[in-house]
Length: 87
Image (cartoon, rainbow, N blue to C red):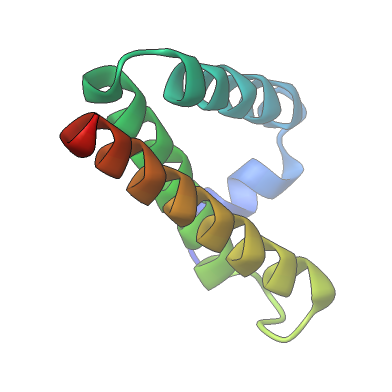
């Protein structure tokens, strides 16, 4: 487990900033043009995957939920990319 992960888990400011930043990136990822939206969604996927990788118990329900969220976001990125290319 990394030191940055530990600091994020105990930081009071991170508990507010991370969900707000994630929500903003999600809105941008879904509403903005594809050349802005796809990188925003990729940033969220990278963060969620990092959190899942560094979780204490890899078999816990929360770790599984993070993997599910990363999968859903991956499908959104693929959908945005295909819409931009084919549309």
